[in-house]
Image 1 (cartoon, rainbow, N blue to C red):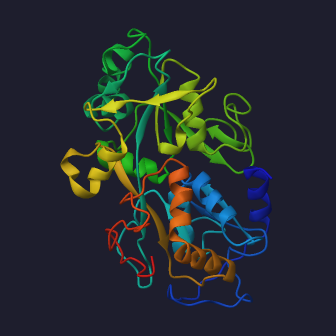
Image 2 (tube, rainbow, N blue to C red):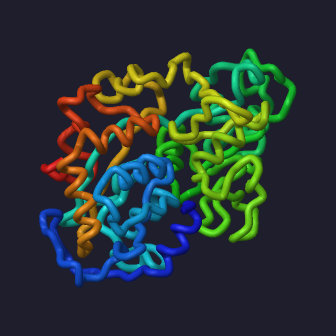
Image 3 (cartoon, helix red, strand yellow):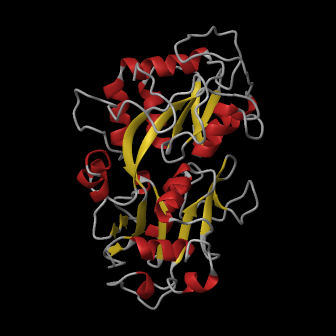
Length: 360
């Protein structure tokens, strides 16, 4: 069953709750929450394939599906601060590509589970010969001086202005980004200094009906489906295909945007001559000043609403099968924090906002 069909089924069955609980409680099946029969939960689109794989590895017939759509949406559903169904605390687990925002509320947990990076993707080397950029040129191409000033954006709007060694230095850049619900966008803005994007930057969003679409498409329709993207693709997957289909395109996205072969094969660009390798991304823990500039942690964060039984079952499975869960993350292209099967999910004792669930 496709992502879109699962999403539609899940949204039809949404219910919500707002009774406080700690992360240690196991709650009865009679208590209603977002999670339930044909239920679904929101969170990082970057993590869509990994969390879907983890659910498939976990308890057979567990009545829970992962909807993705963005870290911001997952956080809204943890805190009850979004539009329905997230106007109440509709879930208590949210895979996120950044930590929780703001101050830590009682019962919330910040759980780092892996490493990733915000990659700058371009067409494959055989077509686009440029192999690197700088932090200054990445900022310039996406947001100019940081505030999206037209003159500063124009200074970086061709391949020759963006970087050296390009197949097509006089060609205009085609630029794609994730939307503002995306934790990847939050991290990208924080690490680059972008606040307002250049007007030519195209936004790829998740649509629960149409699949990935441009923000300028009518909701429920997509100019990106069926070519180059599929309705079942996440926005991250779609950005990977968009840049692989266009020699002039770049886009930022997580590691899951990699297309290794075929018509939409792509590659990442080095930044400041630093490759986003496992070694250079792990330096975020051991040697931050020499890490790949856009390295980041990935999270399985917890809220303080009422936890549904199926949601608790999934969390219990993760706690009891940490290595299997980490394998789902690394199989999707993400990076374990230690590289040792003896210490799965060992990414530090706390996030920057809330304490870590000690069972993880």
